[in-house]
Amino acid sequence: MSFASIHITKRRAFTKGTLLLNTLSEYASMLRTKGAELVRLPAPLDQFVKPIQQYLTFKRVGVAFLVFYVLFVFLALKILQREHLQSPVPGTYIRNTYSFKPRRPLINVSATTDCHANGAEVRKPYFYRLDDNTYFTNAYFDKRQGGPYIRILSLRQNNPEHIHTRRLYCLINSALNHSLIAVPADVHILHDNNDNEYGGYILTCNARDILYDNPCKVRISYERGLSDQLVTIPLVTLNERYFYATSFALCTPPIHGVVTQTQLVEFVELNRLLGAEHFYFYLYMGNPRQSYLNPNVEQVLQHYISAGLVTVFPWQLPIEPERYVWSHAKALAMQHCLYTNMWKYKYLVFNDLDEFLIPHSTNSWSAMMDSIDKEGASGYCAQSAYFPPDVTQSLRTLHSFKRTETINTKHTKCIIRPERVFDMGSDGINKAYDENWPMAVVDQQVALVHHYKWCTTDWDFHNCFDFVTDECVGRYEEQLEENFRNTMLVLAGKSVDTKSMTTYTSP
Image 1 (cartoon, rainbow, N blue to C red):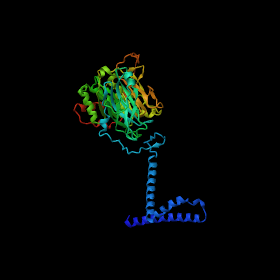
Image 2 (image 1 turned 135 degrees about the vertical axis):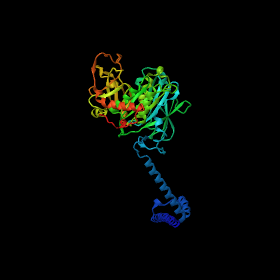
Image 3 (image 1 turned 90 degrees about the vertical axis):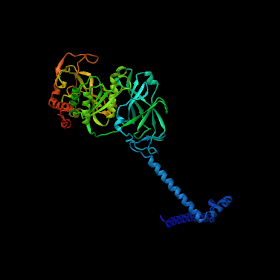
Image 4 (image 1 turned 45 degrees about the horizontal axis):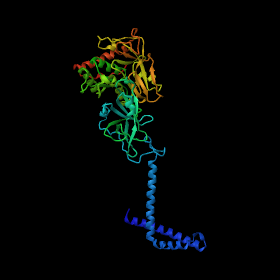
């Protein structure tokens, strides 16, 4: 806008202000001459107004009107902006302290989806020490129904007095005003602790009304504020999806003890025929960080890692597992696999290395789930039978066709919908995320867990004497033998052809 235009605009404003004042003055004079007493000003007030009228010259009235006009426009813009900020924003609601109207924070909180430089490193299990009684591993920003919540996996001393008297707090930076808020952590005890000195726990901090964006980290402390004794843990955000790149991934508890190369190759290849598209192994590490596995087994793992089929997580505990925690803290490893892969795969399968979830009425997990996954369950758990292994044969699944006639109904293995599970147990789903998603038991005619171990009578099983023939695995014999042979040739350095690892399809 040119200087002339500005001058003309000001001149028009001055003119409008002067005309308005003159019009009002003439109207008042007219009423006064007609005897309208209502507009007649008292003498003292009239004497006060006359100097003002003399002071309000043409130029001064115009300037005053222009200032008033600018202030009016500025105030109108602020009102419109406030209305915009208070409009509901789907997915980012924060309740006002004094009102239940959804309100967007007045600060600019940037998106933090990419706040971790290396997401793969953040997802690896690593134990953070708070004190000798309490350790933490991974933490997750859980935005499932009713959330968001912060879930923290913890290894703690199984001391009820310590757990209930020394309460833990999540220290969270509020998205509303950046103030530090202490949220008490609710404690969920994992079912598979088995009364050992240390056990696994899931801590939950309610982040509703505090966070609307994906945070990068959470601080945990015994105090309600910052102190010398606190732990900072990166947060992994569980991003909700409705389309999955792959359907099935398989999780195993920490590998320890005697594991052979043949056993591991057979486990991977048979489960691939059943439908597994990726495997997650937890490799128990001693202290110092040394694997107790045979080097040949590590060669197998590296082979499958190179093929993109396997992810291996080192599993090093901060305590001596054989003395203080049950089964190398497998309960925590299973929760880690559940939460880390939530919304990544449609189904997660949980098996030990000597177990196979075999469909009996179909040939693959995919066909089986198409027929039974219609009930809205959190997972589908198959009951198990014992197959005494033939130790003289390399492929035990193709040479052990005798199983116990009695089915073990308490020892189950599951195919779950991970977003519907809160606590995954070693023998089934310990707790669904919602009571409307119960655990479904699969009929033994549909599927059965083939457990290749010597049957023993214990607290959950009492009949190890009656056997029947079960040759369901025989349908995979030709393909399994071929894939097993090809893999062993590659491992022995006699073949570099890995084509068979990625091209064959399930029967």
